[in-house]
Image 1 (cartoon, rainbow, N blue to C red):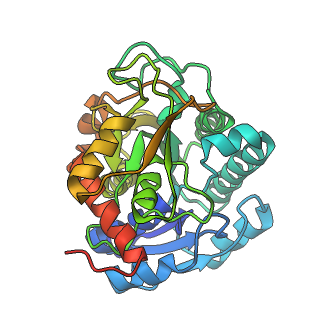
Image 2: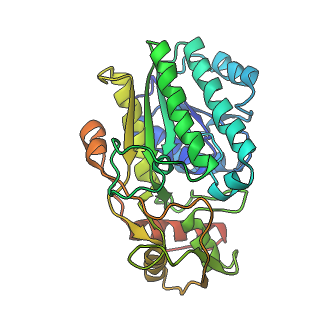
Length: 348
């Protein structure tokens, strides 16, 4: 188990999942944590929130991880790193479709630099933030890790397919390294305190922050992208997982890698609840929890979206002993509490 003797580098530590994982690393394991985040889609104020929740001020290196020399300086200055959780990546499907070069450069170059840094400094354990988007549009559900990868529906998804291959090839030639790629489905919700949640600088593309921003008036109207899909209500279906559950899984994965008990040195594990929820069902759940009617309009399909995807949870339970504990209503409750916190309101 991780402890105060472990020093973990979390790339993208100011981001949504990264910040929640840092909180859990500190609160549940007492681990030392250092972050690397250039705030290209986040704010440095997240470290104030982490300190408020945990009582610990996390050091952040505000550098571009595509800069190999900058990555080398992190590993040199932060002596004794025992593991890396690599979140840092651009993640907007629509933006990746509009600006593919930006995504290929950032998401791939940063991963290569981190892997090279690990090898150069003897860091054995790496957790790679992958995505269910690697599966593309598939006809067999739920999705297991053995499901053949389909054609990537966006450049973002393709960077995750490529990233997994890069990790696989890297550990093959570095026999000391062990890696786990976590293909998580759709993170949602916020910390139970309501003091930390998803707050990207750029316009959000994930469903739940769009819902909460619409409810608070920061977005005037929400557009449901496609209601003519072959699903039970015509809208896309996703597997929503509470962000704190995902954070817990990353810690368990790092502990598995560090244990030396992996039969293969690169494992692939899905993180999902096993339940598919449609966009319209998610809206209904928010309205039930918040007591607010959401101002939304039905619109055309959005490029890059898959129709339906949700996870087979067999492997995550068997290898990590992990199962999502928080349901959709808790995701919506905590996300709404976070939105109210941003508005300066107290939510009871």
